[in-house]
Image (cartoon, rainbow, N blue to C red; front, side, top):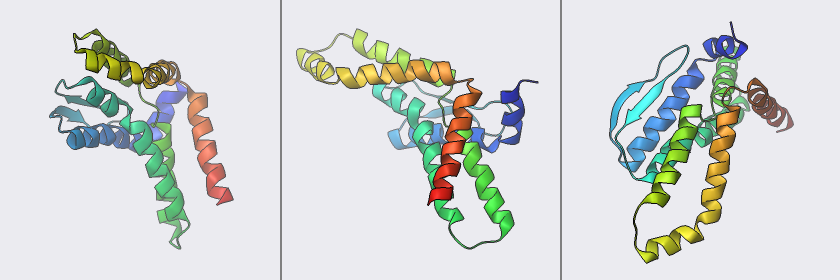
Length: 172
């Protein structure tokens, strides 16, 4: 059994948090969810209506920020006085959220496709001017989507994220 698969089974709640983040982004942006699979030991998904490119990009990248926010909240909660079992539960949820914070290969493909689609459309001169101003951000998004594709199966980057979280927990 692959190490990522084994750890995914232990940290499965991170998959649920990741997919919930996609669902929250859809709800916030007003994009209809067609199908959702939240609870799984291997994968999950959120299938939503086709929408504007910027909405697809936000929906695809939202778990990165949402899961990290969950881990930060975990750090803050661990500073409170509570029984050990609650602390262990918070640590498990936080580490799980971090492990699955990196957008999946499919998320990265969605980002890349949305950026490509956005620049292919026939648009007014004003919109092209606007897109030229946003070109540095677009390039950053493309680089991140490529990086997320590469890191999707990277156990090392996930461990580094978790070790960073543990370091912050110990320092604060």
